[in-house]
Structure formats: structure tokens, C-alpha cells
Amino acid sequence: MAEKRRAMVKIKPKKYNVGDTVKVDFIIIHPMDTGMQKDKKTGEIKPAKYIDNVTFKLDGKPFSQMKVWETVSTNPYFSVNLKVPGKGKITVEYSDNTGEKGSKSKKLKPKG
Amino acid sequence: MRRILVSTALLVSLAFSGEQFAMSDADRAMYAEMLENNPADIFVEEGGEIFEDELGGEAALAKFLGIKEKELPKYIAGFPRYIKKLGNVVGLDQVLQAMMAEQKKEQIKLKDSKMFSLLAYVKSLANDEQFTIDINADEHIKASYELGKKNFMTPRGGRGLSCNSCHSKEVIGMILRTQPLPDLGVNGAGGTWPAYRMTKSSLRSLQRRFQGCMNNALLAVIPIGSKEMVGLEVYVSKLAQDKKQPIAIPGLKR
Amino acid sequence: MERRNFLKGLGAASLVAVTTPTFINAKEEAAKAAPKGPNALSYDNAIRVIADGKEIKVSDKVDLVVPEIAENGAVVPVKVNVDHPMEENNYVKAIHILAKENGNARCADVMLTPLNGKGYFATRVKLAKTQDVVAVVELSDGTFLSANKSVKVTIGGCG
Image (cartoon, rainbow over all chains, first blue to last red; front, top):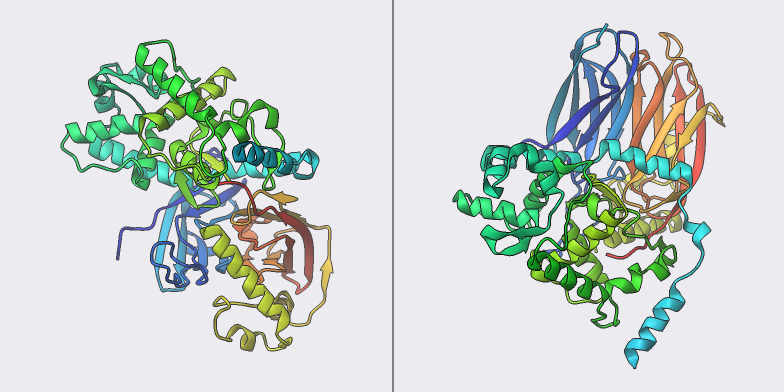
């Protein structure tokens, strides 16, 4: 497969404690092609290519599962909350309608 | 004669319906919040990788420019500027290209999206700085500014329009094609590019944005990096400088 | 222009959805051939798929935040906050985001768990034109709540 798709996982605020509810943001560079647009250069219809599933996991266990359609903006952004149970690793996994899969992780590091 | 009629037609089409399309505070807050998760951040990160891994990072840039590393932010805030080594007033992107040539690295074209990412990263080293463009520093920057101003003011093309037709003081706030015309100085336009354009889903540089404007206004598009485009960038950046608007990259735009 | 082609495409798809006879079977409608998008689905059929005939109560416990006037239709921010606990046996189970006039009315769904701490979800959607954005919320006890807001989409600007 081509180079890994670029993405970011962010936790807000930057400093948090166990028991705090933080915001977990995921943003990924992905065309989210609807299958109804023409390629400007070739004039051909670009086939639909859009993320259709996103799963937020904490230490391997899903805590938010998303179903996504081509109506979500290109280079999509998703955000949920997380009540911090302790140290851990957040992994956001995605897949698209063409079978492409990927993931991005971020450590969960509460101060106290 | 046709040109005057066309300009009049433009004035007539501009409406004073400021309130109808004025952004409410709540809407403004929503769009400002989107800056915290700007897809452009990912492209800027990519630019940073190119800068560090392939060009030698800040150390190499400072060396190329003949300054100390810690002087970089304020120096970068003075671009476009005259670089003696290159014999021209140039943008930061042209300096990066010159570094590629000097290091015998593969050239990245000025209009390439990778160059926009690279430019965004390097220019963002000057984030929060005020522009430090001194248009009287030497004859070259002075000439570049004057050329930029002349291009900004000169009507041309099928509709007889100039940048000033839509960006003069007289029409600020009026509505054109459902968008209120911005005050480029007060909005600090020059300091917020490269920016992510939502309607293009991509990171674009200021000169690339100028090309988009020219396209729509039926002005012949000028190449990025040309004397005229660099002059325009000097002129528009000075507008932000005069209104004390800092550099804040990457921006987020329609 | 990419944006215009995209918007034209969505507009055409939604026109087709309006003028063809109403299909009760949402799957059948989704399976119809092009020129509609791959997931063309009317708002009414999307609701049938989501709530399966159950009552959906408009509630101000669902805070749907969208711009009154969207600068462009390509990237419209949508945020939902549900004023409801997130406890083991009483929590916000799902938030569905829909756009009434899009050819495919569904945008994104999230299935939440008590570990989320709050019934919150945010994303950015494409809107083909001025229309209502709707948030349908499913609670763990099977209740459905909703909120809807109109978003004016300005398709214009230069360059």
C-alpha cells in the first residue's frame, strides 16, 4: 500500500487528571469522494472513496463506534469525550468503502 | 468606454445588505473553534518533516541566510525581502527552492502542494511575530512594493477589474457573490496564509489565492514567484503590517 | 469547479429522491442505480431505518450547534451535546446526524458508552444547500430524542 495516511489524535485539555472528562479529537487526510464528482484533469467520475467506519479504542477496547457516510467533509474531523480512567493508550481505527484500513494512537497520560 | 460601464455595473451589483450576511458572534465562534483542528496542521507537519529531514532545518536556513538561528522568526517575518545571494526580492518559498538547488536536492516547484506545506511550516516559525517588511530598506524592496501596488491598482482583463475594484476602502463590507468584502489590512490577510481552503479541501499559499481571485475576475493569471506576484505579496503583507496584524499560520478560509 | 460539481451532484441526487415515488423499503431505494450517489437515501427513509417507527420527541435536552449561516457548504461544523447522564444503565447510546435535503440524508452516527463521560459528538459535514440539520439521539432505555436547526448555506464568493 502507498504511504500511510496522515492523521492526528489530540486530547484537550493538555493537562488532565483521572476522573476528568477530556475531549478526544481525530482528524485525517482522506478525500471522502462521493462518487458523483468529475476529476478536473481527466473528466472521469471519481469513484466513491470515503471513510465508513471509525472506532475509538482505549487499550484495545472500543468506547465509541462511528458509522460514516460520504456526506462528511473531506479531510474529516470527529470528536468525542472520554472520562479518564487512568493511564492508557487511545487508538483510533478507521476503514473506508474500498477496504482501506488504518489507525493512529495517542497515549493517555493523566497527571494525577 | 466599455471598461467604465463594466466597473459601474460591478458597483451596482454590490449590495449594502451587511446585516443579512454578517457573521453572528456564535457563528464566528464556531469557525474560530475549527482552527483548533485545522486539517492544515497535518500539512504543516508534513512540511516540517521535509524541512528537517531533507533541508537541514533551522540551522541550514540560518546559515543560508547568513544570520543566527535565534534571529530566524523576526527575519522570516520580513519576507518577501531582497536576498543579495539571489539578486532579487524573493518569497520564503524561493529561498527554500534555492536551498534545494544548493544542496543538490530534487526541486519542488513553487506551485506544488508540497511547497505550500514546506512554506507553511517554515513561515509558521514566525507565528505571533509582527511583519518586519521595510519597504525602504533598499532600492530593490522599494521597487517590488511599488510594482505590487501598481498591479493591485491597475485594471486589466475582460471585466476591466483590478484587485482594488473589490478590495478598496470604498467597498469594504459590501456584499459580492454572497460574501462580505474584507478589509485585507484589518483582517491581517497577509499573515494568515498559507491557509486551508475549505472549498478546495487543500492548503494554499497567498500567491496561489491571488491566482484564484485573478481567475474569477477574468484577469490573466500571473505565475507564482514572478516579480509581479512577489510585489503583490509585499503590498498585501504590508497592509497587515500597517494594521499590526501578526503572522498566524496556518489559516482556515472559505 | 470542484465545489460546484459536487454541489450540483448532490442537488441532482436530492431532486431524484424527491420526484421518485416514496419507497417504504429504504434498502431498495439505496440499491437503485446511478446517477445518484452510492448511498442515496431520503430523510424520511433514513428516520425509518434509525428509529424503526418509534416516536422521536423533539427535546431541548439535545443541544445541536451549527452555524446559522455557513460560509460554504463543503465544511459545516456540527456539534451535539445531550443533557443526560452517562451511567452504566442510563446513558446516551447513539447520536445520529442527518441533513434533510442532501441526496443521502445520513452524515454520521456515533455509538457511545458510559466511558465517554458525556453525550457529545462533533464532526463536519457537506451541505448541498440551505437545509435543516437534524440530530437524532437514542438513549439506553430505547427512547428517541431530537433537535433540528436550519443552516443557510451561502454558495458564492470568488476564486
